Length: 157
Image (tube, rainbow, N blue to C red):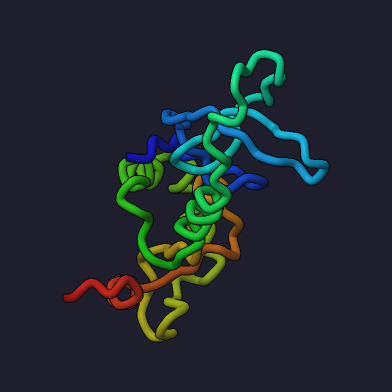
């Protein structure tokens, strides 16, 4: 399970707990191997590269998995509810004072009018993306009525 902190990385997307690291190698453009710890959950390099002198057999190390980070980013940019791995921290975040203030700001911006049907009073704030969870841009959030929010997520009534 992805151990997120509920914070997001404005410049790096959602931060994971980096609780599964593996020493890996990655060939640079100049042909020199870069050796470092790759998080097996989000794909990011954690910490500094290791000096080659400290690695006894670089050829035995697995190669860097570029798809890990790409897949993690794709998951976080979806309009679907956050992946199960993010839900515990997502629910905590929705109870935070920061979210309460941001939610009120968005509802007021939209004059409490559902931006999906333009008919009902908005009671929910919907994330258009989870890419900046915890540090959302206001344009990533939209006021919706409960009925439209259920419809957006495809949850049956």
